[in-house]
Image (cartoon, rainbow, N blue to C red; front, side):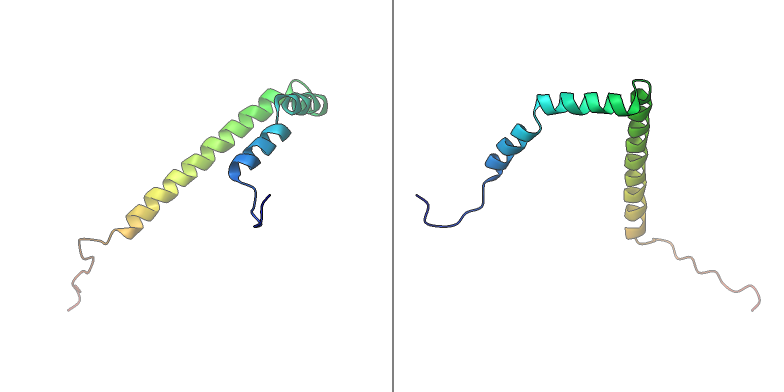
Length: 85
């Protein structure tokens, strides 16, 4: 018998999630999706999700490169002498 209060461990949570999202639930979700959207709309939906994922990853990559270039100090001074003087 436990004398202290403990939260459930991550292993117990993983088992619980595994019971919820089992293969039978995935089959039910797929059947409901086909009934709601129709068989022809599922490939279009999958294609749109794939392109959205690739655009998101592209944006993350661009943000990382722009952050990296903004962090580096400029080695050349961009001051120009005045031509009017």
